Length: 174
Image (cartoon, rainbow, N blue to C red; front, side, top):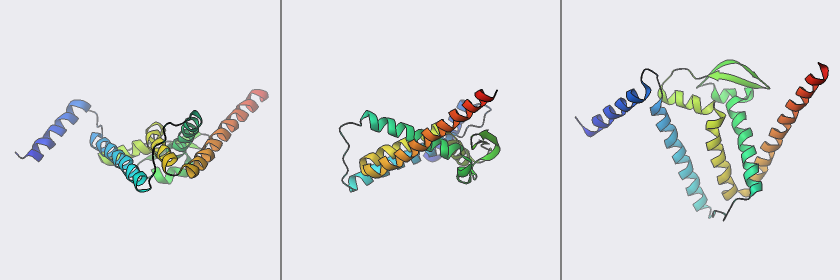
């Protein structure tokens, strides 16, 4: 048996031992982690080529701005009706989830497609990617990144105010 066959068989055994009867897309998750590592590596190379240096620290204001912008961008990408064409190759529409959001399922396609569907439909999963991109943006292109993050934050605050306003109207009417 070759080394490749040994590694392949060991990976299959790990999959069986881990998942039991469930069909967990471990191969797809390995691919997603590899893609994230490549993303971080690419951002690092880009930063070096542009001569960007890491700041000594990130201030509380930037951290709050990036946190709020990351939240809004991940919700928008993972749940908004308008971004469903980006998720459609990997998910299936289930039902409305209120406030222009959708619930979607991830069908049992290949492990890579399933993992991609889980990533694209999970705001918590997207947080890592978006937060990394925005933090790198603060290093590489701080002015443009602050503008984009400010817009996302303003939209998130406006969304919260809309929801509070609607809740207030419901309380007042009944």
